[in-house]
Image (cartoon, rainbow, N blue to C red; front, side, top):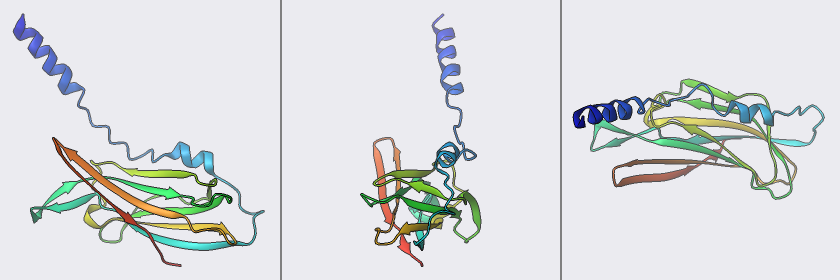
Length: 169
């Protein structure tokens, strides 16, 4: 009986370890709720930002990598103006476009934040992946803040670091 229960417990544990990699969703419900028609908006300033993201980093040598969970944090730092993000594109280490998260305008209310999560199992971007964000802001409004937060934990070991976007245009 003890052997049977141990075997049953092992089967339950193994079957519950199913991968939850879901790279087809990308917060699509979030983007759809945020879509906005900007045809009635005027006097908006255009900007473009680059954000480095690391879905993998080298560990011990150039032949061994460590996978990371990465989060691109998209923040409206204005306490009075709504801002508009018009495009979020994710590229791999070689500059190849992997996916477009959205390419129709979405809004972020004052002080609002949304995220894009790159799952730890999603290593398609490699050690030098990056985002290009395009955005529109009202005159005299502060620029949006784009940050990358990468982390991983294995056993009692933890690793985390951040990156910040740079403005291209």
